[in-house]
Length: 310
View (cartoon, rainbow, N blue to C red):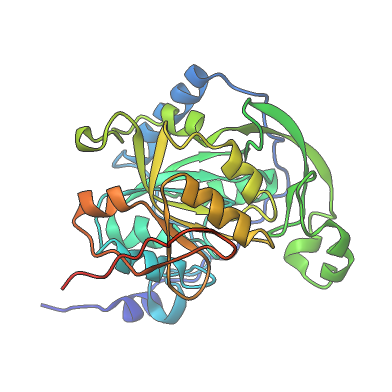
């Protein structure tokens, strides 16, 4: 029997050119939870159909001939922490073009996960649609308040974000040489915003586990929204939706984010790279080995410390 490695397979696959999206539709108005649920059910019928097209990526493989495409090894680390879990569920907020720098694509390709991609930039969302990801997608931003609303969004490629919290606006002139960023010209548009719990509730997946109570559980949430992370976390209902592991880009708010996560029952993993938080209840339920944890800088009291199992 001929066995083709991933590296060899990537050489056999033709390189697909980046889709050229000449026009893109602006994000729609705020949708009710019922409308979101209908939309996600329609998406599910499509991407679970045998006739769903194959992936249409710029490159078949990611870093060093693997499926990993994350910028700072987030997918490598999370995959190890969840012990190569199969059939999980992810959320990636700030999903860019759904391929490059993706923290979730590895789990979809290699571990048979599905999940939810949230991207506010309509141009990037249109490109992502052509990638044929096998997951739910919405052209919107995560809310920084308790209610759905429409907010100004600065389009700046992978560096774009909500105008109120966007960290890169003043530095936009420095990115003129970056064609991917300059393509958006710093245009400001209005985008709908939703709480993550509202979006997750609308997904037609069974994400509740009786052993863990009534909340819906997401195995992995990647949060990278170029400055809005702390505000999004403050607006998140952690009793309605829980998360096994999270990677969060701090953007200068690392200590405040860490303390907020600790107040919501998470532990801060003592690992290099982007901050990783985990829920000890999830780790125990999955039978995983917890990483060592460390105390948030500036926090009071003793830190929770979990030793790895044998």
